[in-house]
Image 1: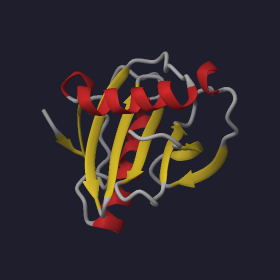
Image 2: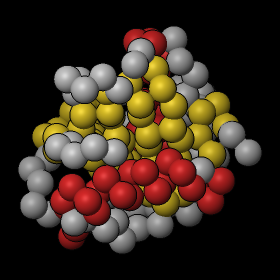
Image 3: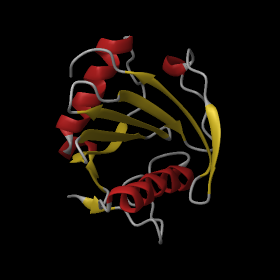
Length: 153
């Protein structure tokens, strides 16, 4: 069942099995606030087993572009289109958030972003990436990295 993420009253609904549940909930709320403020889009997520298309799309991009397989279990996911950009997010039990941004027009920006919740280690499968730090009122310290998508997805 889809859940509209509230960034005013941060909830851990759907993320309870994560060892960094509070930080992951803050990270999810941080993304919800961004999309509401920038695009007036309500950020909704579903359990990963109900959002197989979104999880599959992100998983496929990771495998085809960089031969990356995420070891952690996906908890929630969402996919939507806003302002000509196809977006997908997957939130993992470890505290990892992965988003795919794919501009529909050929010359647009296309990238995969990784965000690590405060308190989690860098997963082995992402050890080749360098992570920059960013402060968030909702999520504490977020570490993030990305790569540019080169293929068609």
